[in-house]
Each structure stands twice: as structure tokens, then as C-alpha cells.
Length: 613
Image (cartoon, rainbow, N blue to C red):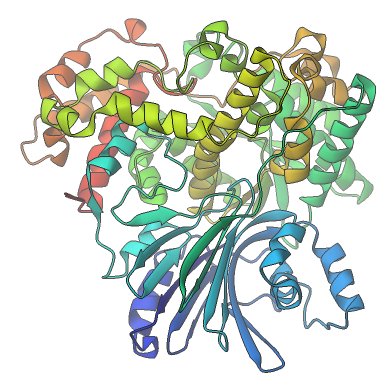
């Protein structure tokens, strides 16, 4: 994995802008701690930071290849999991390769097939490819948005990068945020509208989209989306197909020239990946290393709830023994968790999921000490319908984002002046309606099947990308590559059309996935209820973020004060934690996370010197 950035300008000679390009590239040094490179021509400048995973010698970037009179230059962040197949096909067409990197295969694929090469790729990627003769830039992002890409288009200029900080390092991009950006942060946050970059004039290239920029202007097109069609297979054939796709995805994503491990919580999703990985590594006479995270004194403070029915430790031990893994328990203490909230903002360039982010950051720091690549079970719940809101009649019959809870709490905490400018309820409702308008419909479905399809699409476009953003920024901030096999587009396309009664086989959430894994996982794991990413239950954490927020409220120079109703926020800090434990975002973000989020907003405003406009 890597960090990419670049700059196209039809009016300026960019060969004299190497210092600025270098600054843009340097902002992502942690994404690519192993190497860096830049390439400049009159109207194009490309930068790259490299985390070496495949072909240490032959994969350097920006990579340049010539074909006839044409010169092609690529800067690429990602991993292709069908590299061998593509390479064989290209060799059959007469191409020769200097190394064995997927970068060279991707560049050659573009030379052969042009922009349509994206239809052939199986992987996670964001890449930019410049044709010097045609004076044309092509940018593409993977189908589900595992790898990030932001850009700014102003007049004759296009500036892009893996992260917002790369854009902000260019003096043409200012850290300005208007009322729409504030609505994203304060009402939709920590999620974001697909394609929205929060900072003024900044856009995100949406998942499954590509962009072409030349002297005729900028064009963005969607090259992939799920397609709705009748599911013809019976339950047995369906479960076999799910298993085949899952195993193929998991095993493809074990390819690495550096040490690889899995994240293991003892839940269904991480256990599936661990089972496949351990068996494959056993055949190669290797032992799989697994990692889990927990919090100091959580064993004493844990309180079961409908969202977190059980702690992970016994299940992790069971899985590790069953599959012979070498397991590593990572324990985080409250002061570390609180201090890392700032690191999490700097990694994401935005306020995020509070300690759900900062704990992952600390977790990845520890894993990176011994491993460079990990597999993680993100996205199974969005794809197979595992979240509580897929099963809640209230959620299914309410026209709103199901993870955005207690919107009235947010409203009460914002300043009246800001509320007048934002009209937050209408903003959120419009984003919701815009998403529903995109849903690929299937004529003849029942009203409830249609609604479940809508729910799946909302999750794919919104909640899943929020978690993928989190995983990418927190892991790459430590130089760790995390792969997500459940995001294989072939699996997503297939499961999208499986009817609900099959998805919930055995009257269980993600039932079809459990059926597919019969005989592979222990029965106890197959029957375990969903338990999300663990969070701290230590009351010291609530005290720490409450005190931090109170210090902010007492600071007349705090930039947060102009956005909030100070008295209402202060009153909220006096509420007993036991009466303030309902989620306001997702399943994990309750009272302590709301305080931490406000602290992160304050940190973001200060650290990025945000100009409100």
C-alpha cells in the first residue's frame, strides 16, 4: 500500500514546482515509509510514497513505460489480487515484464486496454495514470472504496491525493469549510456524503468511479455498481457458491512478500478469515499469527447489551487453539486511548469515530512491530445484513439513516446561528433521498424485499465506506496494510441478489454465511451472536473525555465555541453515564464517544487552522 498525489495544470510549467510536489508527497510518508518518488513534466507532476509488499526491487514508482510513441506514467496505491491472470493474458499478447509487481501489470493493462482495464481488475486501488503524448490523466478508484482518493478542480488545474492533507499542502487549496462542510461534520459525521470532501471545493472520487482530465475538461463516470436480478439458485447451491467466493477471496489476499497476519475477535467474520488463512499457511509449513485488542479492566467493567452481547476473550482463545495460531493480545489503557484521539484526527484529516478510531490506531501500531500486512473482517455485516437495523421493524419502516440516532441531541448542542444556516434535518433528509434514488431496483419484488434492498444499498454506500475510511487511515498511519476479503466485488455482486429468507437461513443474522462455513468453523463460533468491534467500558475514559471537553468549554480561544450551544453542552457533561448510554451513531458511539467527538472537532479546527466561510 502507498500514498499517491499529483497535479495537472494547463497554464503553469510544473517542472519548476518540485518543492511543492515534494511537500504534498511528504505529507503521506507514513503511508509509504519504505520509498518515495516524484515525476514532473511541463503540465503534469506525480508523487508517490511506497509501503513495500510485493517486488521490493521492481515496483518503484512513479513507474514509467513506453509503447510506440507514447509515454505512460503511473502512481498507484493498492493491491491487485488477479495479477497472475492478467500477467499471463498480457504476455500472450506479446508484452514482457521487468519485475513481478502488480504496479507493472496494472500499467501494462492500461496500455493494452485503456480506461476499460478497470473492468478486469480484482483488487483495492486508487491510481492515476498520465499519457504524456495525449496530455491526459486517468484516475480510477476501486469498486467499493477501500482505497481513498480526493481531488480539487479549479480552472485549468487538477490536484489529487490519497489523503486530504496532500491537497492542503498545495498553496492553491485552502483549509476552508463552509456551512455544507459543517453539516457534514456536525450532523452526518463521522460518516460523509459519498463524493464529499468536507473542505471547500474538495471532492472525493466515489467508489466504482473513474475520472479523465484533458484539454477538453474533466469527466467523471461510474464504471461499476451492483445490479439487481432474480436469484435462481436453491439454498444448497447458494451456500456452496458463497463458500467458494469467500475462500477464493481470502486465499488470494494472502499473497505477500512480507509477513502477514489476521485480526481475530472470535466473531464469525474474523474467524472465517483466520480459518482459511491458517489452513493455507499450514500447507506451506507456516504458523499464522493472529491479533486481538482489549482494554485494561474491561473484564471488570464490561456490561452486556443488545449491541455487545458478549466479550471476545473466550472465543478468541477457542479459535486460536482450534487452528493452531500464535495469538497476540494487545491491551490498551485509558490514557493511551485518550491521547491517541489527536493522532486519529491527524490520520483521518477529519473528526472520526472517537476512541473507535484511536484504539484501532494503537492496535495497528502494535501489529506493525512484527507484521506489515493483515486481513480483517470488515464489511461482512453490510453485505450479508448483519447489523441490528436490518432486523428491526422500526428501522425498516423509518425513512432515515438507521445508524444516525438521536439527531435531536445533535440539534440541541449546536448554536442557534449555525442551525439557521444549515437547516440540518433537511440536509440529512436530502442526502438520504439522493441515495435511495440510486438504488438498483428489481421489478416485481415485494415491498419488504425492496426495502431490504434499499437498506443494503444505504449500508454499502455510507456505513461501509465510513468503516473503510477508518480502517485505511488508522492502519496506513502506522505503515500497516490491512486487506478486507469480504469486499471482493464478486462476492458483493452475488450476495446482493440473495433473497432475505436465504440470507437469514436458520433464522439467524448472516445465516447463509454460517451455513457456508459448516464443517469449517466450530459450532460454537457459528452460533455466536454478532458482537461488534470492542470498546472500552472503563469509567475512567468517560471521566477523561468529559474533563477534556470541560477544558475546551472554559477556553475562550476554542474555535469549537462558535459552533455549539455552550450551556447545553456543559449541561450534558453533568448527565450520569448510565443514563447516557444510547448510541447516537452506529452501535458503539454513546455518551463518552460524543464527548470525544466534540474534542476531536476542536482539535481538527485548531490543527488544520480551519477557516469558516
